[in-house]
Length: 482
Image (cartoon, rainbow, N blue to C red; front, side, top):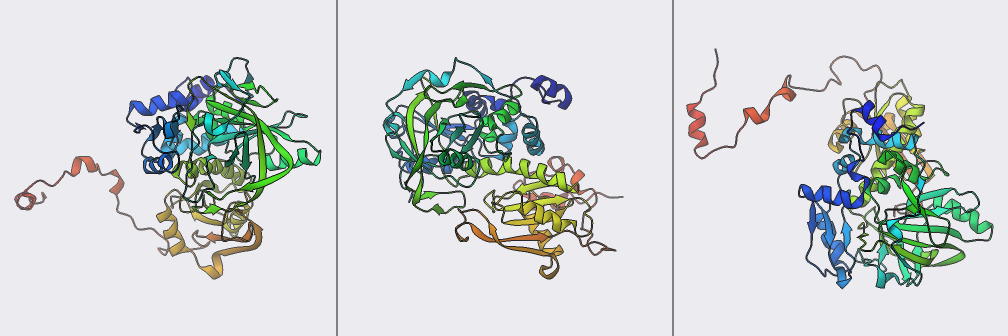
């Protein structure tokens, strides 16, 4: 059973009221208040100009692009391009972010339907995407303009079950999108609809608040509506509204909503497109969306995420960490923490921290971790004295505690990511590294060096910038002693 935000505040000590990330425009103002929101010169080119500057600012500030390509609708980017910002949006310390997200996944809050929605202030039934929206072209060899930060919300009309996810959406015509659907929940729902001879109703919500954006990336069972996870992160039911042309429910406060259908038995060319592994997803015949309506606020904002940028990586990585941690702890009580590293594009390399595993248990953790999601390619298991959020620490553990003939786990012919160019259409090998101290180790062999009292020293009090003539001053101030 879930609790309200105020009740949780009484338990956890977090401030009552909505978290800073509960509203997109409020979040932008929150960032602006302390210098983390930038505004560019107007009229930057929608082909590469917006994306290039968004990449330069990624992780430094969120960015607003007025009149991009001369279009009246501004573009925004970089909303959650630092891990600390995600925690701040949720109103928790950074080291509690994964636990907060896991709690939201386990205690979803059903949404609340309304008929008064900002996202439907303006309604277009004659959709012309590039005329009505400022859709950028991001990377050099992208096939054209792409919607990259839209929450694709699919709904089975017979059951009302919804699924929320983000897919790359190629502008293929005025009212037509090409979509890459990887083997996840949206594709499963579409396959069912297609077998039954029908299209799949959907909507694409662009410009949602950071909490709903993060919730869309949760790894949860098919049938669990990620908008309910968003409600848990908000601490109250998320307001949703029924689309004008279908039965899909969308966030009422979204800036822009596209309403349409995934078309049964139709595939068209889509791609290439610059993806999170820092390579291009190749061109192929893929799924097609036909749009029936476009609704938006009176003065909307268009959110874009540059393919392969920091915001792209973190948005996919941190929600996965929460899901993976919860999954592993159910089977392995020794698991303490997990981290998807930036070097592994926040998808492929998982670090797992364990506390005093039983003999052989670290290898079982490796196998369990590889099974949590097909994206995971390499797993490294370390002890609690190793910070899994510091790749240098993890590499040190591999360098000093791992032997390939004893500690390497290999699994071949497994399903992996189709976006990993080293695989054969997604089929490849996976590795696990047991970098824990071997069971039965004795003496000083694996005792880490340390300087007693080092962490307690007040550096700000004891160290100052070197002035001119520092060498003479140092000679005049010999060490004090008894």
